[in-house]
Image 1: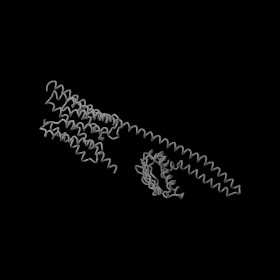
Image 2: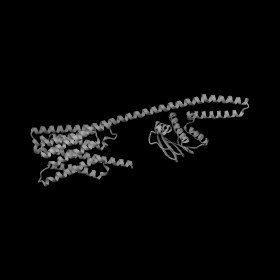
Image 3: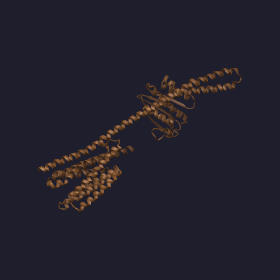
Image 4: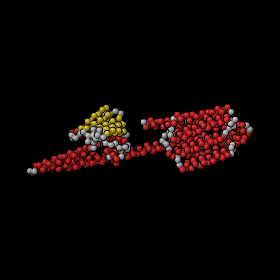
Length: 261
Length: 223
């Protein structure tokens, strides 16, 4: 190989190496750029989820506060005023002969006072703070069963773990909403409420009602599914839990919620 | 010479292996990878013809077979990328590249063994295919698939095309000098062509295996 050929060989090799290096750089750049972009997208999505979670938490907390305020107002103001009226009526009854009229008015007033108490209790579950979730649910199940409309079977298994107050309220609201749904819409005669305590809290609410059509959307849009299911889903997400729904027309519904402890 | 022959046989086997992978998994490949299968088929036929035809012509080598294969491979590979990234620019490039290559191929049939014309024909087709591969990379950067790129079969095809045709391009750009100056010493350079082709078919075969795997996994998920 003469000098010119050697020079050409060298230039050829350098040229080939540069072009191949360029091709290799493009390929590596595409891989690295995609990885970087995907990581950033993941970070952004995480931030968005965290933001939405916080917004949701704030909404639910303000809702709880508002409920508490209404419950206190009802109990302390309206309830107290009604009790005063009741006492006044009782005093007036003894001075007048129209006992029947007073008896009817007193009965209506008693019912109104009871309704106010019930609304107040539903809005602000005082027992939850005093006696805890299990006791409150037990009482709620007994109260509904005693109403005679529906039989609520409450069962609990496993070693109970104390929950943070905010989480306990959310769990209570989920169960309250599920029981309300069964009472109002399912036309059920029996509800099973089962709690399993372990590393997770598993809630099962099952009724023998008419069932419903499960929405296709995973986020249970409230315009399509109603506020109840949407709120249950939101609260479950807030508690970082999972919600599984099984329902069949005329065969009842089953809600299984698993919450981390 | 023996070294070049060995490389030439390995190159023929590599495209044949790709053809076998394609044929054994024909039902598990989509339209785009059927094009890759067609490319393997064309390459295998071209290799067989290049080996057998000269025997009937008393050893005379026919450039026309390689040139026809090149024309078909440009068409198939550019169509593969056009189907992946069907933009206005890609469509224009597809028509311009294929029409230009066809015209040059016809001219090569008229002016047999014209080195300059062959170089122009090759350089245009290699640059065109490299642009298609780079356009596909641009498309990947724009639409960012959520999968790891190393598991995307089309990414391997684009990488193989870019790597292979960049190498071809440099060899072809030196073609005139190689033929004029080096004469008998050009074997080493031509063996590089075969090395690039072997790498090309190895990468494409890997992408075909990945593609079949992905398709089978998707069908299992559906079941």
